[in-house]
Length: 307
Image 1 (cartoon, rainbow, N blue to C red):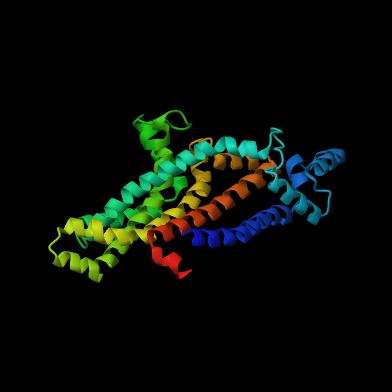
Image 2 (image 1 turned 90 degrees about the vertical axis):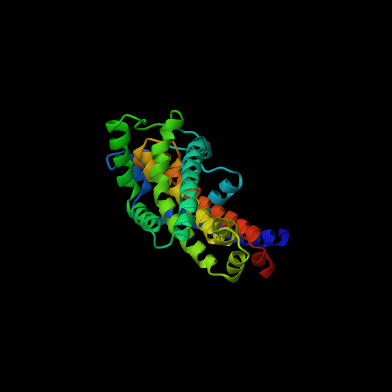
């Protein structure tokens, strides 16, 4: 396992370098003048030049890239133009809220999708199977920007059961978590059902049935154990999507996370903060995939033995 982790870490380094470079180039090579976008066309030429020097945009691109890499090596992402605080500090202050929301959505999706997926597979073709497939189709099709306002209208404004927005107490996370986790739950449910049905046809499951084991034990102990591999992989990949997809949900519910911070930075044209938020989201994807690789190898020893 240690050898496998070492090889994965060695592959992680060039990936990180590529991600960092891509973020730098995307921000610096998009059409338009970022200084003019931040200050507006009516700003004085001296003001534009001062900001250009402050951001280092008056230097050659390669010099800027070298300074950017050197800053990253020191953990320095620059300073926010709006607050003058370090970008790293601004993002770190919002991370607890985003992690809290992503963990709640992931937990909600897993606790809903895996049991229902197993039950749907065990009752294949029945009323429960058809109902779960119908609701999973609805969950996958409904976008967060539509589901969030709908939940607010029904449960906050109509029934007055839950707060409309903000991060104030356990009740305030329910609607954002449902909005963020609904799509993921739908995908996981269909994947769990398919994986359990496929595993149920394997010889070792038939042998378990031949030994007279109860049907629930055959599905939970034998079929689900091997069906979890693709489910765990999808959950890891979806975790990266949750952290980045929280941009819409955090905006709808005024949740003070990294996603809302990026929207605020775009509105204020805070160029260094936008760059830091984009890099943060990209790195989330990279490390989520790395964690999935390690977990996958831990669950299935054949993978690490093949390397």
